[in-house]
Image (cartoon, rainbow over all chains, first blue to last red; front, side, top):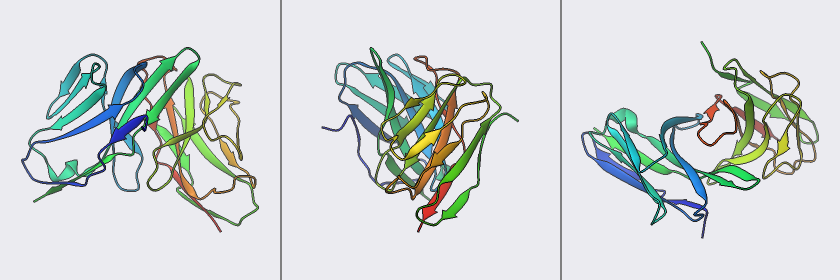
Length: 112
Length: 114
């Protein structure tokens, strides 16, 4: 099982739709979680950090379920500009082993 | 404006040549990182540095070297020993290595070795 797994998609949705992505992680020692977005041939940009059960920022809501070991990202009222790849990142802190583990990303295409 | 700069954006080299990628930040961040990204693969950590004059190997350090002589700068050298150097190289920084420190990325350098 991969340490961080995401459905690669692509998710094709119309403008205004609500879309949700899940990300599962395998190591229960994972401490922090992040969502980044990456546009084609560009660098990843931080979208949200998820430290407790979840948080909301405008149209974006991230939730964490430690018992089931997954985080989710919900995007409401999708815009054309939301089209990108969304990367799930899990931070592992276990003794001297401290690192970020990156998922392969979920591709989203918002269509007019 | 604060940020991370990487240069050049595109770099072409012949096999067998060493090449150095630049990364500079003016965010006053302590920690800096180098990743590579290949199609169909997640970001993989090459090296990271927590403070000046200190750096640690990441998951795929073989064939690479770094230095951290200044807080603002963390150059990466891709040596001829790196078997598959063609990739998208990303530099990142964070305030520290603490639990809640998000990483911020530069625009990346696309290296092509033929």
